Length: 440
Image (cartoon, rainbow, N blue to C red; front, side):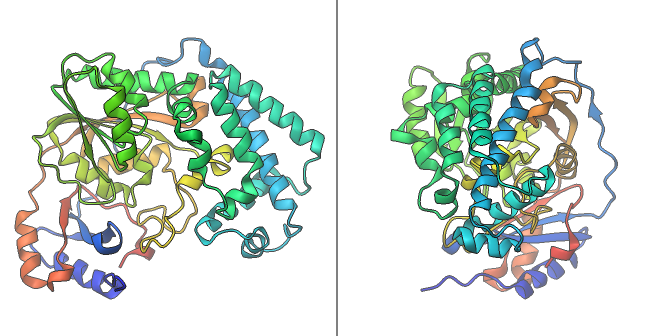
């Protein structure tokens, strides 16, 4: 039996009902989960304007030990190879002068990947590549990519992943092969660990995140979207005895982590989805760590508010996030970001809605954190640090003053709304950041 989701009018009714309650000035209503698990979620605010959030200055070049000076040049070489591979793929269709849909048709792009084709065309326009690259030019760029990969310390398996992905763009965009099959070739994790741990950029970021966690001297840590355990390794190396809850949306990663960290006492495991209700039958945590995962949140503000409620008063959130849509990402990892085939809730419901992008910018994350009720914001690396060229940042923020609990609002909503429209969760936030043209 087909699943029927609440309509736009239904969500508007929820918003009007909540905004009629005392103390609620603004509401944003969205759907979380998918299919039979879909649920209404709401963010409410008292309407006060959000002041400009102060960001504490980072120590100058704290992450730069001298080795990061090569990062900008290496990344430029990798970006060049990616955009030339994109140009080669698109130009083979002979339809570059047509619109995005015509190009996607010529590539026989799967419906869920057509947003990537639009990103490719924007990349070609930004790099002014009106003609296809020659075979020699493309081969030279691939050699330069591999040399840059080696200089940045990526393992050989990651080099093979990059090369294979760029040569497989037509098959990837047609959904004839999956990026997972390339990233986890043979069921191994070496390439994935190379991307998130075994390279100069990730080592510096993971170390900074680990130091931020250790500075809190936590007794309880929750890691969300822990994946291959790349940041987990760095954190467990610097914290003492700790109750550490390792979570991910995939049982595959939990099973691998149980084996990898079997020697470590105090590490527990659980499934957790940032796009579903995140209530845990747990005591509050001193630190919540989320490395390279929150860009997957359908609504960043809602997920940050839900995480805030998992923190003890004064608890710390530590994020690692990419803030730039690199060409190499659009030709590789973005295939992991496409909506699941048959998903009823494709795409984002926050400020990224309808924009063919995955990542929030550095300033956007700062505003989202402040709006969701965090304070004492810190961001690394500093803009002048060579590592900043990677477009990845470590954000540290502290849970702000206690917000009113949602129970009274949920009770009143249950009295006023049909049962299927009663929000599964309501989060109180300092402010809403929304594109009102998309608001129900």
